[in-house]
Figure 1 (cartoon, helix red, strand yellow):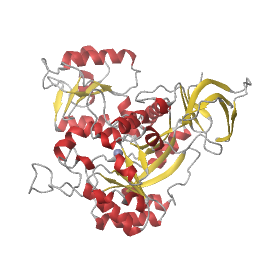
Figure 2 (cartoon, helix red, strand yellow; figure 1 turned 180 degrees about the horizontal axis):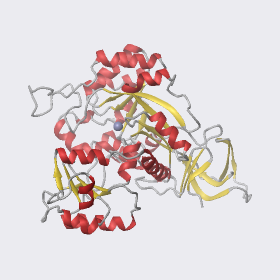
Figure 3 (spheres, protein in one colour; figure 1 turned 60 degrees about the vertical axis):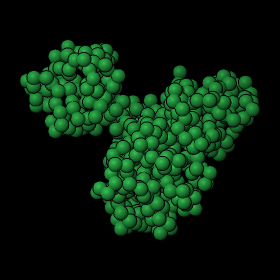
Figure 4 (tube, helix red, strand yellow; figure 1 turned 45 degrees about the horizontal axis):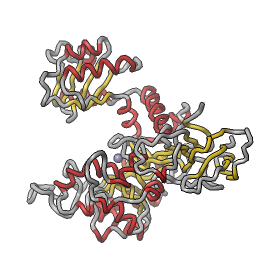
Length: 478
Ligand SMILES: [Zn+2]
């Protein structure tokens, strides 16, 4: 299909016609006004967007759940459920909400309120701290708590229910994944790196065979599946089919900032002298190196989750020792001397700029005095590092415009930008969220917008008119 009357993002705005052949841009020529193909009426075209770090099944699951975090009372939360149920398809599964915080509510969660809202369909609301679950009568019966007086379960019984809520039959989850993939395509996404902790080869082969063709998928392999992957001869970069590619070996070497388990050179404030006061190294070098080496020798290149500065230093040491490149996921806190090593060693920095805005207050407290090296995306870029940006969905929304905006603005809403010296330019941020350009010979993965994204101050929520994958529309068909 000839794509007519487009303006290439960043150009002078001359109208062109783009002809994809076999998924590749075969020609770009001045617009002729011929009636063939599809007329984009002067809209702007950019390379399709990638999200370089997602947990797709979790994201798909989350998309089916109702956010009740804004409810100011139990009655209000129940009303939100009732409203949502009016349009929610009857899936034969419990209706799930999440995020309620009842500590300051004037009333209390009660089974009768949810019975009025949910009727016969089982309803489960998971609290914001995930330590409580509020159920209606149908859900209490389903989960073996029939007759419970309040419907509010806490701690162990709540965890048991939450676990079962997360266990969904493959066919249901695949259907939800297809919806989530379509929603991503509607935001201009053409590809994801799926780091779901799962045997992703089978999951995605099944989904794609069933017709979920909205996205390209590069899938991660976890350490517990490494031997299985090697036995099958999987190698990073190998195509499984036209949409599915073998991704990296995912290794998790430390914890996270919020739980004070990110492994750092300095102690966490208030934890001085205690056990694990510098965080937790979950894969010390004597375990990390053999795993990386085993993967690398079989052609499965490692990507190492490292959040604290010491974990990052050790991961870089490991890449140096083995003499291969790869990726580091997160790279949230970095020692000054390690910035240049990403480029030197050929290690891509896979970063999630939106996390900086979620975590800025926590970082100011737990990494006090060192936040000039936290989420230091500009410093990485200046040091020559290649950036790959992502959302870590469901931690942040699977929407690269949100990711790009966070990197460019370092603020959200009304607050002052956090460490604005770490802002990067829009073109750099978009480059870290794309894998191609709009040029002859490039893959015809494209996003079409009413305005040129490069001319927009804040690209959050930017409307997307159409998305093309290998030259075919995945979003925006009439
Ligand atoms: Zn992740």
